[in-house]
Image 1 (cartoon, rainbow, N blue to C red):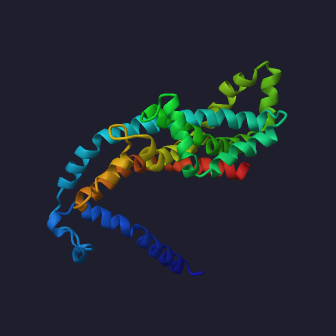
Image 2: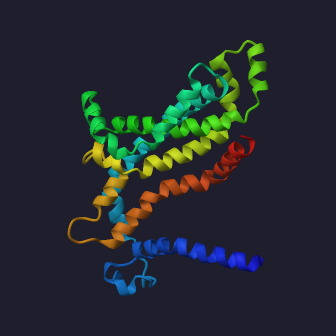
Image 3: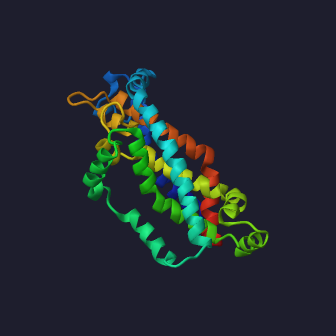
Length: 268
């Protein structure tokens, strides 16, 4: 196929993909009087940041809640997934071939099907309507995917390294601490981006388990719409602010994410 035609097709797809982003950005800096259907595609006459100021005031507490939630949940689920992946990839034991699919099965359980028992369990242990309770939920639900990613990553590491370490007298956790953990940087970047994005953008658990005061930013963003009149510039500015952390993560770590994905796929 002609290279020019390929670029043209890619350009068309890029324009289609970025059209909603364009509308969100120009609406977020418009004055309320300019936000009408017939002016939806037009650039703003003047750049207004009132929407961002208002959105930030209303989202700030929930923004901090999301920070307190996403960082610990990402770190804990990544570490547990790394340990699980290491054991399942390099230390075969009776039942390991069954245990791994059982863990993966957790990825396919719909959130809606476990909401009621989950809420009752969190009430019993005193973590309902708390950020630690939400962290616990995301850590448990994140273990299957983090285990899968790390297991595939560790399978690509030669067994000869493991055997050499055994001969030198290293134990199961010593080998992980001094050999596999330093080799896992790309894996942690991949899992970290995946988990941070999933936890930050998650809505169902957040709106079901927490109430006002402990809700993450995605619930607060939904509440920005109000019940009668929607301030679209504030709503769009809030959407931009809510998306910024994940965007920054991808910009800073995107190249490591691609490298980690390729390392696991090619060698595995």
